[in-house]
Length: 266
Image (cartoon, rainbow, N blue to C red; front, side):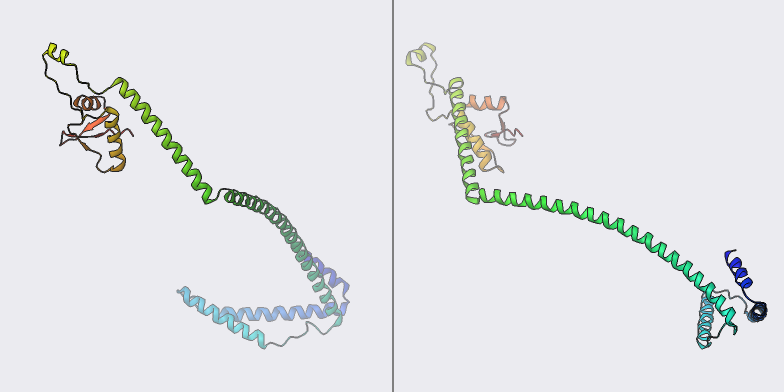
C-alpha cells in the first residue's frame, strides 16, 4: 500500500504529458509481458516423472536465462527526464529505507557483540584469578618441596621405622612378660615329690616358651607368606600347641597334623 501511495503521489507530481507517456510505456510493457507469458505456457514441455530430469532441465533453463541477461544491453526506462527524476527519487527513498534497516540491524548486532564482549571479559578475569591462585599454590608446593628434600624424607622415614621397631620390641617384651607369668615353661619337680607321687617324669630342657612359639609363627607368616606352616618337633610343648589350636590362634595343616600356622586375623 505504501508503494502504491508513493507511486500515486509521484504520478500526481508529474505533468499531464509525462503521465500520458508513462501510462503508454506501462501498457506497452504489460503487453510484452503478457505475450511472453503466453509463449512460455505454450512452449512448456510435459512434466517429467523423474526428479533428476526436472533438476537438469531447471539448471539448463537458468543457465540459458543467465546468458541472455548477459547479452542484454541496459537501456533507460523512458526518454522523459521528468519521469526519470521521479523514478530516481523513488529508488533513492527505497534505498534510504533499506539502509535504515541495515543500520538498525548493525546496531542490534553491535549491542549483542558488546554484551558478548563484556561476558568474555568477565570470564577472562575469572580465569586470571584461577590462574593466579594455581600459581600461588604451585609456588607454595615448590617451597615445601625445597624444605622437605629427599634427605629429609629419608631421615624422617628412618626415624619412623626406628620408632616402630622400638614399639614392636616393647610389645614383644610385654607379651613375653605376660606369657612368662601366666604360661610358664614346665619345671622339673623335686625327687621327693616324684617319689611320693611315684610318677617318673623327665622334662625336656630344649622346650621353647609360648612367646617364642608365637614369634616363630609370626616370622614364618611374614617371611614366607606362601608357605606359613611350621613343623612341630620335640621343642614345642604339646599343651602350648593344644592351647593355641583350641583358642583359634593357630590352625593345623589339613593333611599333616605336625604342621601348624598362625590364624589369619584380617
